[in-house]
Length: 376
Image (cartoon, rainbow, N blue to C red; front, side, top):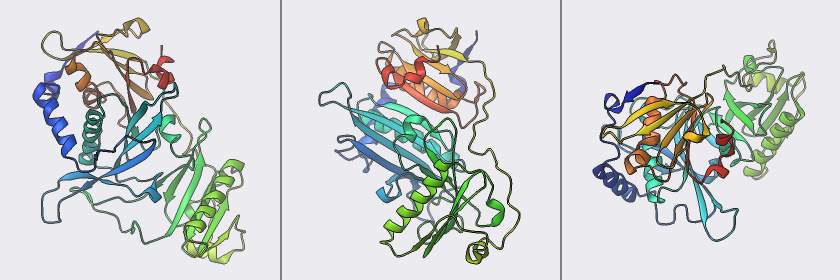
């Protein structure tokens, strides 16, 4: 069992009284964290954006994401999603979950800001929320359940200091092709924006082509009834949002020349692909203890046993697909404050993929994260 000295990761100052005070002050100064944040049931979303002008150095903050775009995430961006619900045990208490979502093409500066802002928001809400690090295509079921209509992955993103928005006009160009598919293990349908050409089609999925005044759906030969239904619902919702000023053409036929012309001409359709099916490599599950009792914060590997979940410990459970951070109620302030930041730095050291989802669970919250207890 080895120990990993935190000094080697530039995290030595995290968790000090000065660091805590600075983070609380930053949270109160963030204009998006208004007095009512997390005070009523519902979902709130913010996107990380460069708040400086073109000629200045990049300075990242957050801006509220329009409610009409909830469930739609640009692959080049990072977001913070706050979910507030009533306590199922009754009473007036509200429960808050903080998710920071990272697109597959989001820059390191953006998802770093998202992680830091999630900590800010957690501080503002008293340190009680559960925290989730979500990544494109690997989201937790808790996150997916917030969007019963499914989630959509859009190309492009907001300008950043390291990346510019693609030629796709985020709000104005509505001529897009979307692939609609579902993982066998999930109820949620995912919608991927794909290149507007025939080679994007395959026999295993449903596709929706938005041509502004006409909405087409096309189905592969082996598409599921669920995917067909979802694409039809999407087409109907788009029409409603445009006040009926467009036509829905469902299940287009091979002789629909307008449809094929939009795709650059009819061509050979690819066989069904496995892009919405998870192929997880087997991993050896591991457990770590975060401790600062020696005066220097260290991470020590211990046997993966439920008995190691002791109140004066912070534990990291690497379960492969997911990594959990369990916060004991009697653990030190430094250990509590550092836990999520340590995991983000150590995730590569532990051999986990960058898209691994991370969930922070405080002692007593296990009933809200049953998947965590199943790891033992």
